[in-house]
Image (cartoon, rainbow, N blue to C red; front, side, top):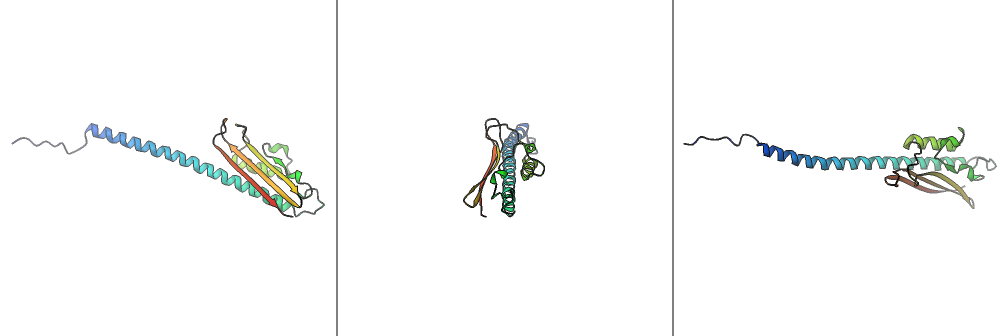
Length: 160
């Protein structure tokens, strides 16, 4: 009778290497998808914060319309006082409402970087007939080519 050989008690070196290669390919695919998911979640969070800030700006302008109609700070009388370029907070005094908008924006998404020409942080208030129109444009982030930007554009009408 021939001796019994026990080849089925473990893995050969080739089988172990093949298993490691298969695991490595699968793991690298998962790692790539995980990175894309993290970037997507970060972008969604940034856009959510930009929308919240834009809504706060509209609400604060709307609240200011409750001032006395003859008050110069009433946006229905002087809407241009609420126009803002929020790239530099230092251009507004500490008591100016635009300073708080700019500071809030910088706290949430960081200061203005100017890494591409598309970046924008502006609030425009105009009055047509009796209504105020508030246009807010936030374009944040991105590289020098304008890729990977987060953008929020909001237009609201405020009735007297």
